[in-house]
Image (cartoon, rainbow, N blue to C red; front, side, top):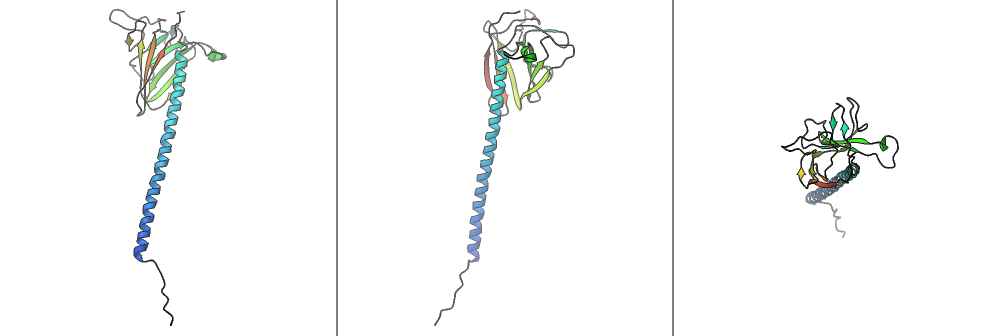
Length: 213
């Protein structure tokens, strides 16, 4: 006598357990992929930030290594010192640091000529300013290039030849008024740069010994 055929099938409980396991695995997989993508995006952002910082410090080190002790005449016809550092500026268009520099070695044309260089912090953007020559034509404006973005702090200190740290250059004190046609240069400059939420970067730049001209 043949036994009756029993058809095997999943019960409702088994189906629900399977769906629950599948849902849990899906959530785990999604979170893993999302974490991987977020990590990759953060690494790409950090890599880009480090690259931009390296390019900026290479540029400013080159500029400060070529400082020229040559007073300048600005677009208002006013004499300015060879190097000027301000701890506070009156507007976003004013540079925090401005100086004369020699042309780029091995270059031709405009790049080989002496230049007036400045850096300013304008609404979170650190901008490089380049004037057409050291003595500027009336009402002439510099060319502005974005060197870094998302900058919160761009502050300088100046080490004079007597070993004193100062916030401004030319040196100001209570007993004398600085000469704004000065060609005097300090011994070194210290830059504090803070970009985004990263810790401040502090760099020291020693100035080469040059004689005024």
